[in-house]
Image (cartoon, rainbow, N blue to C red; front, side, top):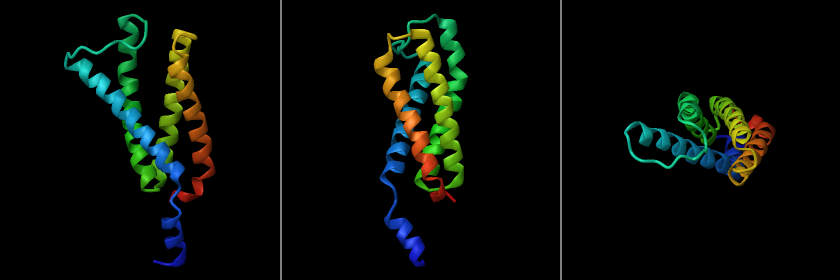
Amino acid sequence: MNINDRERVERFPLGVVIVAVVMFFAALGTASYWILRWIGKPVAETLPVGPEIYKAFVYPDIVLSALLFVGAFGLLKLRKFGFVAALLALGMWFSDLLLIFGLTKWDRISFVGPCLLFVVFSVGYLWTKKSLFH
């Protein structure tokens, strides 16, 4: 282990850990929601939309969950695949949030607003730290 490796290990950015942890719990929540719905457990509906709209969210949300899990793991390992998966997941999450905002307008801004801020700042933050990922 040379000096540069030791320096990189000692200066592991807390921001990367925070982004990874939030991504992990977002993935866990999304996956849990759809798994509970698939096995027939009663889950409160989160959006005031019809069942056909809910069905349209299933597969994109499962892909989003997988990307969030892979991205979170890869970010903690400081791997290039984690950086790419995280950016893909955050972009997909951003699109999902804009769709939810379009459907609910200002009714769900207390949920959509903080998530949008997190996604935008996370993408910017990760982009500034892209040299860490190998």
